[in-house]
Image 1 (cartoon, one colour):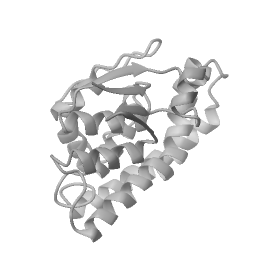
Image 2 (image 1 turned 135 degrees about the vertical axis):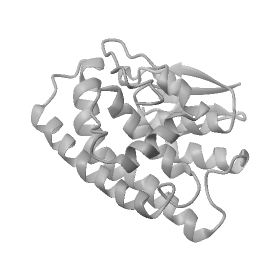
Image 3 (image 1 turned 90 degrees about the vertical axis):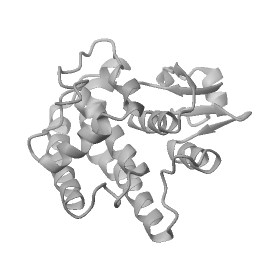
Image 4 (image 1 turned 180 degrees about the horizontal axis):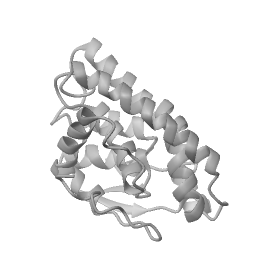
Length: 221
């Protein structure tokens, strides 16, 4: 049995969960309070971060390394294109959301609103939240530009880029911090992703102290 150490509202963990579910791999989810710096967990990943996966007799940390391994060892269905140029575009967008979007939006909104409370590390910085919400508009507009030219974010087929973006947005959607009225194209794209069987586990997540909005699990939102 594959074992994934995760936290429910981590976009990096959610990305891995989506890939596992899309490839129909059974997984045992273990919620890990990584901020407590448990020695056993630090032996699994000295970086002290989630996700960490136990698979095929080894342990892998970092979501990108995990997803690349899953793609290479369980290639069906494919989430990375065969064409090098198309593959590069997928990786570029994965980096965009895991780096730029994460720093500008996720850290300022999700981490301030949720993570600080869960980890008991202080109170939300309203200026950071405001800055993050403003940045969200820029990213939604950029996604709109991409979707005006393509069926999916990186091209004509769904890829890891779509799962990565959806993982980040789903975390923000849990706290009702996505303005779905800003872009019909992005909303339609997210509805397609959200309706996939791979997404069901994410929609069932419950985080103590935080109640998701009614539309969170609504496939026809």
